[in-house]
Length: 278
Image: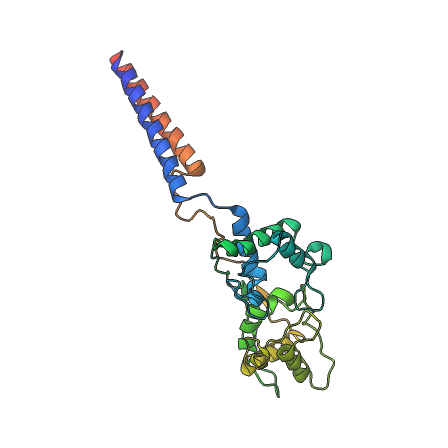
């Protein structure tokens, strides 16, 4: 066998080994995960954690990290998310009932919530709100700082009322408030909630998480929403789970392109060796 042919055979074998080892490395670095459970975790962080707590421990909503005493807990949880609970703060989240979530998204949420029963729920940190607010001038004769109120609004209210107060599954807040003392009206609604509606009580005096000072900050921010919209949307910068972080350079199209470049170089070298022999 000519030396050039032997060189070519050995080189091709080494290239094949390199490609296989690189592929195994990529698989080892990126273990397979259930995409439905990851989607459910992200949806929970964006829509449910504000009321039910980031780990389902309860906040102004019910505890979800528990055993569900039902023959079909999946159907129980799905029905609650889809239709809400009339007369309680739990709204209907399905698109069929005017909510924002598709049937597939609700299925993913159900799977994620029930995974707490076995302790298998992945911990997904909610992404920070993608909003940028210019400095807001406080309203005269209204207690509270609207700049702090804007942060509190993003953390507690935007999920239901929309990032601009435009309404989502909750009422529109970016509007004029027809009252002699709109600040007192809005404050009473936040502090005490609205009995028999989807609006829970947020004050610590009523079992909620917010202090009186925080409610005052929220009130002045909400009143300003009705006058001028101070929210300027910006694109999210946080990477979604399951991205390319930490992936081997041999993965995907990069590895394929490098392989063919190496193969071409090997063939060219073999041809040159053969020509020299001739």
